[in-house]
Length: 64
Image 1 (tube, rainbow, N blue to C red):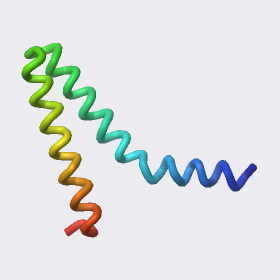
Image 2 (cartoon, rainbow, N blue to C red):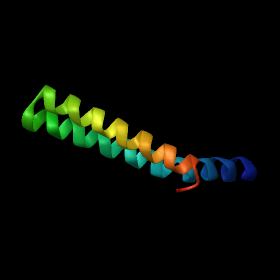
Image 3 (cartoon, rainbow, N blue to C red):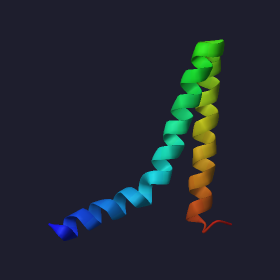
Image 4 (cartoon, rainbow, N blue to C red):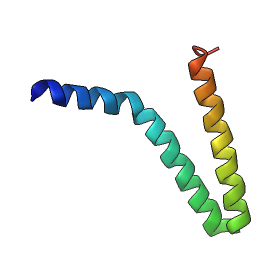
């Protein structure tokens, strides 16, 4: 039981920053939708996806 809890906490710790990044993009997109409408929200979502892809690609290269 104790080992399972440690595994779960380790997994959550590993992906917590990714979840924060995705949630931040979702909040930014929702805010743009409320402020400037659907086109701005779609552009914001696209920009967040591109930024996230760049961050993942850089992490796979070891931060270079």
